Amino acid sequence: MTLTVLFDLDGTLVDSEQVAVEAFRAAFSECVGPGRAPTDELLAMAGLPFERIVETLGLPPTMAPSFRRHSVSRVHTVRPFPGVTAMLAALSRQGVGLGIITGKDRGRAEQVIALTGLGAFCSELVTPSDPPAPKPAPDGVHHLIGRLRGTTRDTVLVGDSMNDIRAGQNAGVYTVACTWGAGRTDVLRTAGPDALVESVAELETVLTTRLGARMNGLVR
Image 1 (cartoon, rainbow, N blue to C red):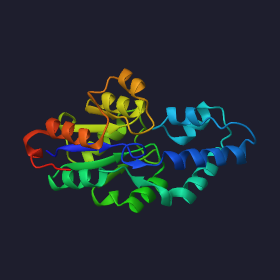
Image 2 (cartoon, one colour):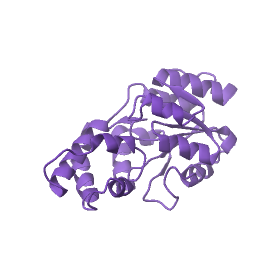
Image 3 (spheres, one colour):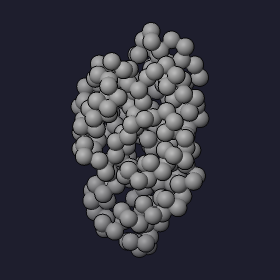
Image 4 (cartoon, rainbow, N blue to C red):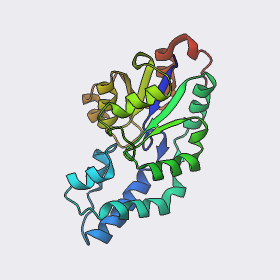
């Protein structure tokens, strides 16, 4: 049995909101024309595959490839949130299995993970490009648990959106909502996560407590 922590990517491990907003506005201008791009609505649906967001907002399908092209051109500005790399390193040293479950397509997710160095700690990845049904379905969570040789009882899922929390709940794992991403605190509370944290340091404390004695020595 392996203690396992699964993370959302954007808004949880990496600060990519500005890239997403700029790419969305550029794609909107290119594919729709003048007017206000619905960026608030985009952020409210964080965690969903972009095609589903486009469909829900009634935007043209051409937005998806345009958005991805503009995102890739800005990806060099994406950084891990302060404290994230040290936290992942500490978890990895303790033998915790680490995985990422994201609404970003595999190509861009792998690019972000490589550029930010997160791949040194997170060995497994599930994206909407893969066979498991995307969040909020539990399929990707169960897939990662299997790959990391964990169990639902000993798994924690951390994310910044309603879809992250629902995916974890649907899979039967312990859920932690973080407030430094796109999700609003009041909205995240309504999802009923097992814990809600406002800083990486607070997240580390929750993980230490939840994962128990084998996590002794986890430091920031």
